[in-house]
Length: 423
Image 1: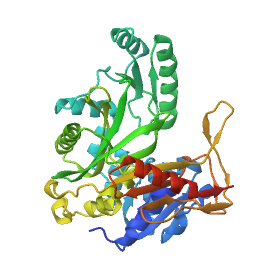
Image 2: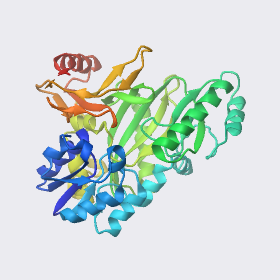
Image 3: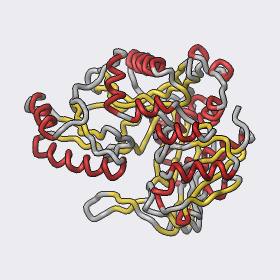
Image 4: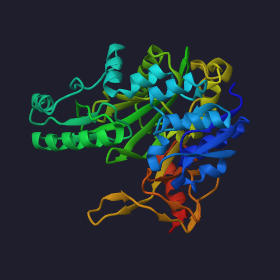
């Protein structure tokens, strides 16, 4: 078991979430922050806080400074949350060299699944269906030829090799659209990810986005059922459900079996998510990527299983086995009811109808409450949000014991109506 202090290498709602989970295990926490993020709630929820050099996002990407802060504070482990350094294999290796436990998969697993094309190749090697696509890195000429081979009704999705969270992705239905999408994806990927390499896949034009939650101890791998993340805006998830409503049981079984096969091949350690597209017309499914970290939407899995996934991360990193945790494949709890997560972002609507990150002073922050209603947030009255960071302010999660999607939707709507944020 992890002893000593846990440094939380993140900010916002997920940093608050990790601090609370650590407290349940009697672990002291250390927050980190740059000077221009000192009022973020995570700095108040941790037992102590250390300032980082630099400003903005760059400060949270400074692995050397974060490790130095951990050692100076006497921490023994680092939880990266999601985003920032959570999928950075070099950072995980640096933690190990410094004698710090990295809360997440092994560095080699991060390296494999952090390269989307390599992960796709590995999935195909173990017999999991993948979409036709190009070999990365791909030139615009190669991508155009691939699109042409799909015929007049063909379409592709341009993807960043190092992408994630919807970044560096755009669909293209013609050669002209492809040229524009290719340039924009390359620029976005280079800016956000430091790697402008791209590849293209055939686009499934009517698809559901279904992901399977994996949990492993480095030897045994189990699943914690699936989530439906089909409701997206600009390829960014905004509503997530667990379990996936109306999913054919046979398709569910196949998705879980495929995910376990990939997890077992990687001797998966800690939490991870295997993501698929499911053709809405045929039920055919295709692997698209694996996320070797805690997901933003882990909350809905927690609600339907009754498990605390962040606590489980810490216990697994401390050496506990799935058997000791009661989570071997034959003991996985069945989902109860339906849970839905609604992401609440600090945004402004432009005259073109597009939402853009916004910032400003929150003068009132009154979240809803009641049975089956949960809010994970870092907002509070008097806090000034900063558009330099991700716009996610709060996650509203509702859970109903009913297996009827309409009941979950009604509960979510009522809770949203009760949520008062002004500023």
